[in-house]
Image (cartoon, rainbow, N blue to C red; front, side, top):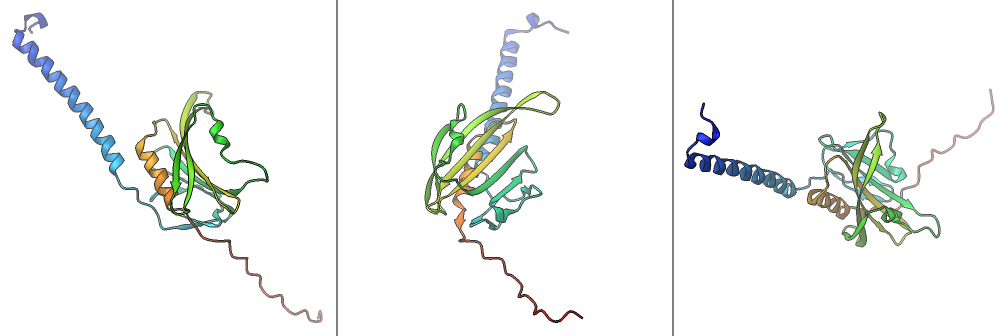
Length: 202
């Protein structure tokens, strides 16, 4: 077997060119995958009632059990990635200002428009460290969009992702969900059955 220094010059050059071609092709393929992910259209489920709002959730995401959407909170999990989405509508106590998550270290704020509600809001992104049950440290990235309504309600959309870094695809997902939130009006009162006439006890 020939040693590297025994190769002719043209062969060494050809091997280096082949290495750079493979390296460039790998980078190009990675960029193509990222680009394709960003261009993939966001498909949403039909609208569902969430308190006084209509919301549309990402298609195929599974609802987390033990929730009551009429109470104003719903959470769904992505079956393909370690991430979940929570939508919350709540009435803040008198004098309390929403968006306290903006105080998180490293949380940058950007404007976002809730088209279906015709309201301006803000989007925040930050990373936080977590300790798993076995004691090891991990981290997750969070992206939050929130806005307030004239009725005194606050709407929050929280996207959490473990491990991987969030990017343009996650911002598009958050924006798409925010745009599809619309006002549904107050919840209808619970119907009460008419009481039966009391008769003599036999």
